[in-house]
Image 1 (cartoon, rainbow, N blue to C red):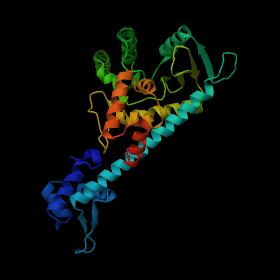
Image 2 (image 1 turned 60 degrees about the vertical axis):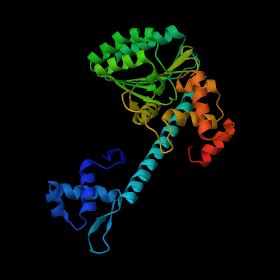
Image 3 (image 1 turned 90 degrees about the vertical axis):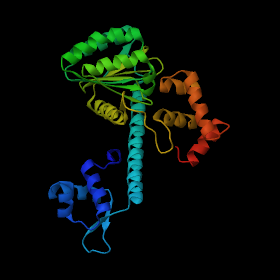
Image 4 (image 1 turned 90 degrees about the horizontal axis):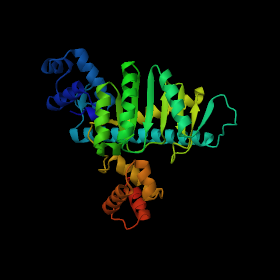
Length: 327
């Protein structure tokens, strides 16, 4: 099946039949495929949109299926363009989120602002989160960077999560891909999914964040120390931007049980993120924090990428990756 390339089952069947029986018209295709003529015409519209049909040079006014080698190249190019556009949207959202966080990073409790509440210290943050959770009615959207979750934290969160899901609250959480290597985290996520929670993973996340009912967001002031302080944001413009950021990242994530995808260069999302950070000059420790892995693992991924690029330095790896179209 070619559904991953944008071709649904009916359209693929019609495409295959047109390759095998190029002289058949709509009526003949309908009979041979046991489909209605309306279904055939809908499939032809899809094939035309995907540029898999061309006007016949021999029979005026009729269409012919392009050859499979050209057709698959067209579909692959289309998918790559869509992936590139999606990646650009994710990066643009990350930049916007980083700017938003930076705008409020220097806020102090004495600074009055109707849409911002500043929390100082872990106790104050926990109390405010507990209050917002009690008031939660419809949906919780969470970015959870940092890699594997601590067993103690998981056990403490289970009763609350179960209560929310039993109340009908929709829970969506994005973790880092690195949690797939944590047995107790995978077990917890599987338990959560069994109750109706939704979980996806991505290679990296812009910040830790919880959005309550699309009206209130809590984000840390410092990404390297989320317990130091946080801001509670309620402004409509800010929440619209943060919800859009979540939806964009969620769309690029994959369920925990899904296989790890690779791009046309054989790179996983985690390797893609590492390569980008290498080109930007990040250290192993910085890469490890972004990916939620140990510095040793980050170093291993970076070394493997350099070997694949036959590069002797990180700078050379960045240059060669750019020339090869990996960046």
